[in-house]
Length: 310
Image (cartoon, rainbow, N blue to C red; front, top):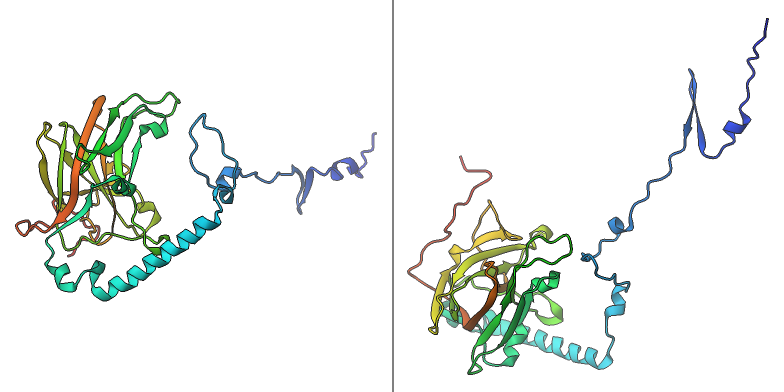
């Protein structure tokens, strides 16, 4: 007969660093150790989107700042002057106007183009920023009293293997800033209609109005409406009620619609994307707002209540 020894030692298995010994009252199991999960750096530090083929910029944020002493003194002088004007305008009335004049105001010109300095309030963009081929330019009109927006639209998408659609050009006003780069908003609550004087080449444009939002996920919410130009040499006086503007998010019309918030207007823009390749032009004289007493509509679209009243 063979005698089986019950004394079995496993010195080599126990001393391995990559093995854990799990003891229980019934049995013994040997389980391999689990290495800690490695989290990619991109999930820890969110950076801006970088298109394929674009070189990575390995610079810290403070390395992009131009530290200039004279420029800093000019900035301090500028901001304190703006702060002084803000305090003085408050004593006069809303937006520096007497209260009676503010209440009886029926027309107001917000933007007009009477010189090269008026272009400082606007910025241009096109699909060339994402690798497209569209071009957009801005210059003064024939008599230096109008804004002449022109360029070439191309719907050819960039060859990056990612972008499927392309072809847009836009002009957008800059965010107004108060002293020390604080956000400043346009208050159009006394008006109900937008008034534009322009002439185009027959293309349809989109007017986009951006308002101040309360949450970060609403930063891409824009109120839009269509602008149809007639074409030809004659000017158009176009009046669009604010009740006609509908809510969109990144180009998609939202189901939950609500009227435009007129007391916190940030920017206004004009976008062309009709997929008709070729040259375009749009000449603008002024952009203003007015009070139309004949227009009594509050909102032109259906508003679905999540919790309807019983």
